[in-house]
Image (tube, rainbow, N blue to C red):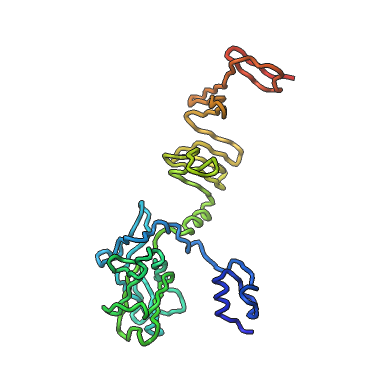
Length: 317
């Protein structure tokens, strides 16, 4: 039988594959059916405000909302849309704006703007608010010439920036212009991280503050990096197979020749129970081994060295 587009779409939305038209939904296997690229995953989603949106007027057109120096979203006020060269029912969000005679709809224009923020990012009370309301929401405001259009007359694809009027009866007539006000996501995506890994072949973890619970959860502060910045990386560079540094200061480095470099003002190995120093290396290169308070008893392991304040014991065969 022919492909049933309705059944196929429904099964994909359920996370099932589509094979035979005669199968029921329950007979199809569950699998991964959505193809999502790294540049489609918003890693700064948590920075998108759900209320108290910052912009809503003409004076703020082109303004960028940022958090801690990281750009998150851009405000477009009444950007002129570019129509399709086939009819006046389909319009594209381009910057700069395309030809007044329209552009082809089959190919994606290099100036096409994408990744606009929809009302799903706002609190429920702003679900029906548009980008020029008081208070503003994420719903786009569409105007034909100077007249605001009913949301029943069009559908805006927030992902691709394509505006479609529902029919020729409500579409703009020849010579009329369409404008739109919208918020666009300009924050980081997963591709910002994966592309840098692919080009540099360096895998790094950087933290200005990290907290780990060593007792299985809760609010334990057993291990933490409270200040500064620590970077650990694995690199294909023969000189830096494994590197730990803080800023420009290198503290630990393993090269491909198996050389291990440890740089520190003071390196100490302590007894885990008593926290007493066992081995200390000072900045001046002096090595100090801990001494014991009593002479050893029994048989010392072969090759072992044991210090007291007055004696040195070496275990021999």
